[in-house]
Length: 468
Image (cartoon, rainbow, N blue to C red; front, side, top):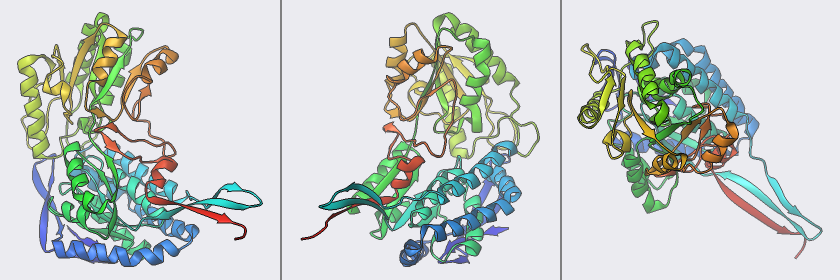
């Protein structure tokens, strides 16, 4: 089956076709349309034309359209789940969670309104606050969660009256293209457009004067380029970028009890999560025990094609990431001790053994950089002040976790960690009514919550006197 672009309410072929590889086999399993520059410009123009009528609708009318959009996804939920596993690699169960979560995200934001708010009122006059839509939004999304991350942009963007041009990662374009098929039936023409490229149209979107905002999720390096490109027109930006999250285990925690939670936090989606636990810090007294517990979990993990029942960890999503992760493993083996895994799995596809590495120096690449794979460095510490300093010694500041039987102690430590989100005794809990965003070089702006909704609007103050 060939998947198409969506431009101005029409499903169209591209100027070329783009092969899509199943990471579990390393072989092409589908093709999709690839847009050229002219088609990208057509999509921007269509979104600009649609903005006026769409933003003029009442919020209730927009909600009805978005609920129908969500219904359309739900009607084809099994198809989305199957396709997501084939293009991304994650196990079917995880793909199912992502699809169901994406539907919930869309419904949630469809139902949230930013009404006109009275800030001050007296006999002399009143001051009102209005949140008005920005215009055309470019949504540029990554390959690790191609559907749910897009929905975190689509929901608030369209609910607040903006229109969108969506550009998925070229290695995972199919679920986004499938959304286009549903949008044709449920949304007015031009409100939601899909262009698919081979990493060549991003600069056009981020520099185009008719794009009012770019919402980008991806690497910090690419985020910098988006900022540079958008600077010429001072676009609004939301950037959710890389992380190197520390998991801090305190000295009141049993290594055997906590190891499964840590292993899951580090290897969910094959470790390809911006908020994954990427550096594990354990007290020196329990360091050896935790390393061995994690190693046993790594050795017993079922790594297989995500389509197969019982798979815990699927392949890495693409060849470039596969090579990068193997490079991290090779370097870690030179400067640290690999206690589990440490090799590629000899089969078709991009499979890597879950790998646990100990005895690494603080300046090792696996400690300093974001690995984005199932390769877990475990490091020892002696004092709480020391581990806080180590956790903060990073240009990233996305998230992190603290594990303890004393929640108040955990909260006191959390206040000193330089991240946008810090969890205590849990991981990846992201309520839709709570904002999240990165500190330092992990991004700017917020997603989710009212704060995330407001990111797609301009605040306007109406200051009125009762008479002149």
